[in-house]
Length: 198
Image (tube, rainbow, N blue to C red):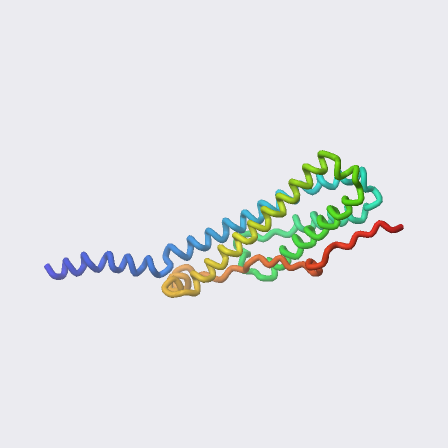
């Protein structure tokens, strides 16, 4: 009788102990971080899809600023050519390369928007106003998605490094830390310099 009672009590205690060892919390945190990364990529793609429309709208009125338009198109091409899939989220150099390409695109968009200030006919164009609003909205969504991804990575990295989850993280899942998104572009702290001199 005592043996059956011991087994009856031991099963729930062992189940509770295993659940506290990261069996479920580690993959849950990992999947949450991967989902947040997918959101980041979705918003970058949305921005990349809007840029050709913005460039075409501005091109007609800002022909003299061809270099800026070319810079935006080239930065978009580079930004869309670099991809980071969920299995590469721990690769710091790949994440840095992705962030640099996206940062360069952001800088070129900033130059383009600053250039438009000199062209009142563009600013009054309804198509331009709508596209500018879409780009600004896309930039805001990107910022929020990056913040959410970094928070999910922080939670995942904390989960796999703290007791008792570290037990399941290392022994069962072989969990490795993920890299946060660091959007560091050279000169990002400086406003773009726009000159209309000859």
